[in-house]
Length: 193
Image 1 (cartoon, rainbow, N blue to C red):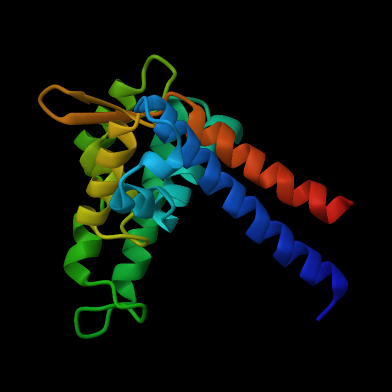
Image 2: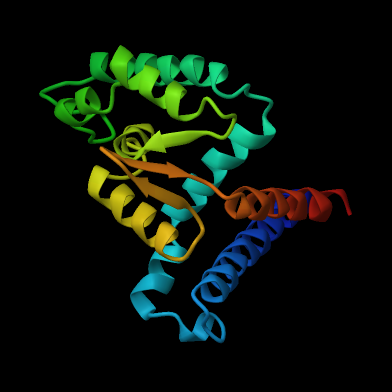
């Protein structure tokens, strides 16, 4: 293995640990607790999960990749539908090679009305999604129920916002994106050193 490969691996692991530490510290602070050690064991397990990192990465991309909000969301969601169609075409006996069911992939597609709803909710310039839309976005990574559970816990600790109207709407106050940006910057710094 090349020394640069090992440096990259070490940087990725250290940055990921720092990301999860930051998430726990902020969650504890938002909950008025003394620190991460005061968090419930099950909450800590969720807050340090890959699902949280994926959600943070998603909001990071929306904020820092120059995607215009709300107009750029249409293209993103349409590409998501195209990806689901490709996966559906790969199904054999009702499942993809990776084990995703045809039913799950069909459920993950956005209708035109759902795309318009996301764009409407995001019209103020901050991306906002109904909870089911985020479950669709993350269908390749986690089940709908796992996604819902993570979203609820992130909102419970103030790392996401949830509004309940006719549907549950979710947005980010910004911490997760910033923590994920720091995570990436730590990796780049370590590799460049």
